[in-house]
Length: 100
Image 1 (cartoon, rainbow, N blue to C red):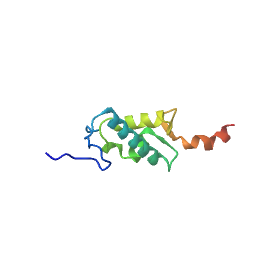
Image 2 (spheres, rainbow, N blue to C red):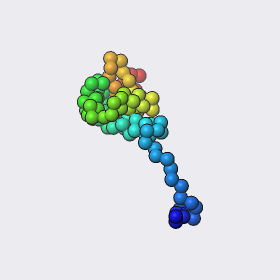
Image 3 (cartoon, one colour):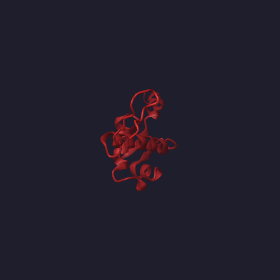
Image 4 (cartoon, one colour):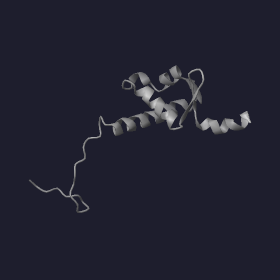
């Protein structure tokens, strides 16, 4: 069997597949959180149902929308508002002078 070397001169090591690992699930949730933010951006504030509709969440894997929303909220991309509404967090700074 031929020895496969890395172009830098070191041995080439195969990485285990990332799929179905916690790291993979985190990357998926992060990408889908950005998709939520993109869907929310033109409106600024949407209800959960409207946000699901705008990002076509019905076609996502089971639990994907909820995981992405949780990630988006915990990372500060999206603010959870009372009554089941969500806001693009970038509007927080824009609206701050109005509340002062």
